[in-house]
Length: 55
Image (cartoon, rainbow, N blue to C red; front, side, top):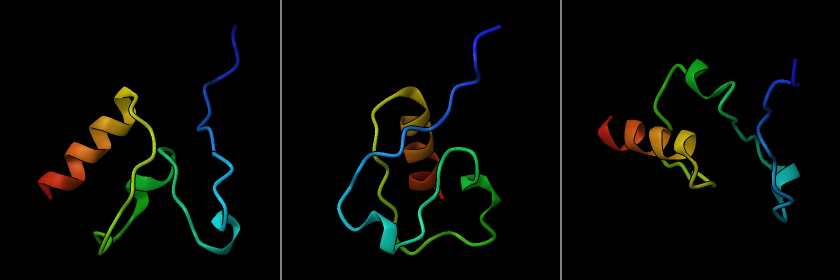
């Protein structure tokens, strides 16, 4: 069986100084974030972008 897919965490400068979310823990949020940046144009990123835009 192939290994499970995992989120690719890009090497963005300054990323280690902030909390970030992945598709695995994003839906555990209790409140809508004031702002959000979604990096990635795959179907998962597009679905989450649509979800938060609709909220």
